[in-house]
Image 1 (cartoon, chains in turn green, blue):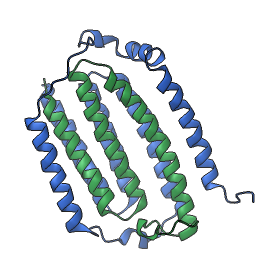
Image 2 (image 1 turned 180 degrees about the horizontal axis):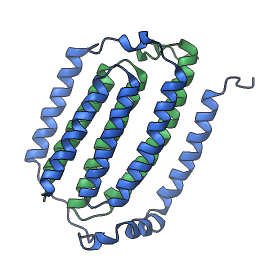
Image 3 (image 1 turned 45 degrees about the vertical axis):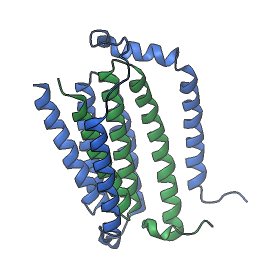
Image 4 (image 1 turned 180 degrees about the vertical axis):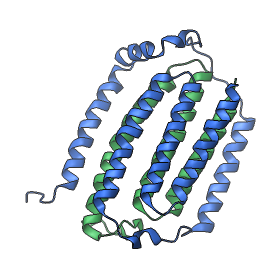
Length: 100
Length: 168
């Protein structure tokens, strides 16, 4: 039996790696992938809590999280394609004006 | 035994996650992200949620990552896009990350778990998928419907965003 804190620490490590990707990388595709890592780390901790508290709520929540993540990726990649057409670049620092 | 498998899957997941954020080529990052997702799915099986593991593989590996790779291929990035400096705002970001890390580690190791246990013990969880489907269509029917509308909105939004001529 693996203790709950192991899963939480794993989740924290993956969350930190994802956050460092969002903060340090400038390539918008890798920023989006780091967001996926963050989603996954949250999923791990939700399922771990759900398992150790013998509840279903966390697992049901993960189903919704995965759905939201899929929607987020579709919108994110659409924005990425629109941005690449407008600026011909994938550097997030160049996204500094609101006007299209 | 379970602990051994946990350590194997967790270390591969962490190593591939580090590769995702540290490699320059987005295609390599995407492939390592797939490895990470597979290992997270394996961890879901260790947590007695085989349905979620299957969903994780279908949606993340099957849909999300294919979409990512497709976007990378369609955009046809030049080599110059790969040569960005990785440690751009390094010191501030790393200070922020370390602060967050220490804070959450402290909370995990010292915080008490005071929530009460529910009825779904390991024996009851053998019918994992059945319980989940039943709950989704009874107790969680409203969020289920809301999420379907959200998916529709995302579908329309993604189509509108990439349309070339906005039909003025």
